[in-house]
Length: 490
Image 1 (cartoon, rainbow, N blue to C red):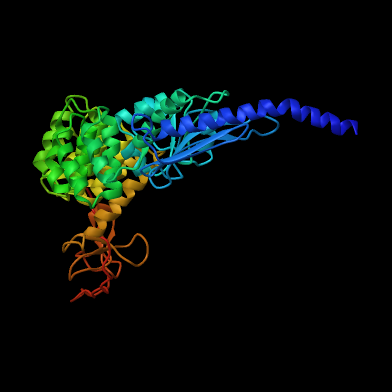
Image 2: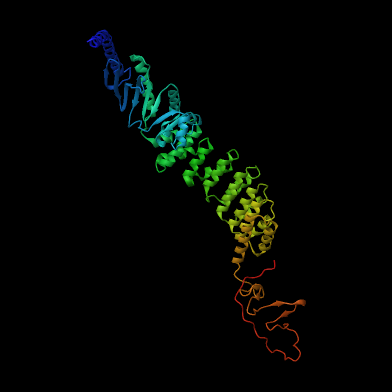
């Protein structure tokens, strides 16, 4: 009986306090509802609120954004938190998440989670971004990036398409509701998916203050919407961009229309070498020999050897007999990479007149140049290159790359020779070391002291007859051996 009396006494004592708090929460719910519905407040529609003894809840709509205030239960004995949130599955998407970079986000990235980059190095280093790449690159323009950083620093979280902030432990008054709600709604509007993603990407590519963001926006626009007119229009405008990397991407995308821009980038000494090289690679085999020759002749004396090498390589892709004359002056360049690229370009030209300077290049001190020259001689070399090729192999017995290139070149040169001229010594296909004379009078020949030649019967051809013998009226003809490789004495 005594425990029951104790419970009744507690209820009688606590009831007035609980009743007062319930009335207070009802009044606060009414005030919240008014503030949320007011045009100068949050301007929400379909507002509803509920009040209990220990909590107050509110919910309303602004277009397709839902605004809610509720108490979130704490775990493991912790008290709950009052949270205000803005969400919209359609406008924000359930996958949208933004957070400050931390050890946890870096570990997630190591595990394969994709952190989307906007091109803004400061922003990308401070904020981890997850969601649809094309949507977020379009959405995160310069004002939005500033707003996101400020919001995250103030305690706002964006997770799973829900933007929220934890309120103070005390139940906030309507002014706190309106101030916090406006902040969250403004951020939600900024982060909402644009009505036209390609249109927003094109706008960012043309007007963002950060050139890396402009390039990233154009890159995503081309990758995801390359067949749309927004991509073509943005690329054409980007041909006039102040940043060379943006012009490079636009020129590469536009093909024939972008080639003049790419050539200008390649020849401009003020453009970073990496960009100029990329421009030459983007040209492929399209430009003329004369245009590439200009780039090569400007870059090499200026010490821009990366550009010069790329120009020589591009000239090789032209496969024109005019290439040799255009590049031969750089075959003796102090930059081994450039000299090797020139040698390969001369080989690709197919011009036999390149053989002589390539033979001279076999004497280079740089192994890469010797190997490139030997390889090129396999294409344009003549029989005169065989001895120098064998000699360079003997001079550098430990250079296996050179050995492969030189022996391959010798085989290629010999394969191009279809036969020997009449009277030229050739290797017979029979016993090793046997020689044959090319032409209708072919036969086995043996050299003897004094320059005499033995005929097929073992006698000196054209000499006196043996004692007791009769002069031959007609020397028997030896069988004609099968054709063999010609033997050269160069």
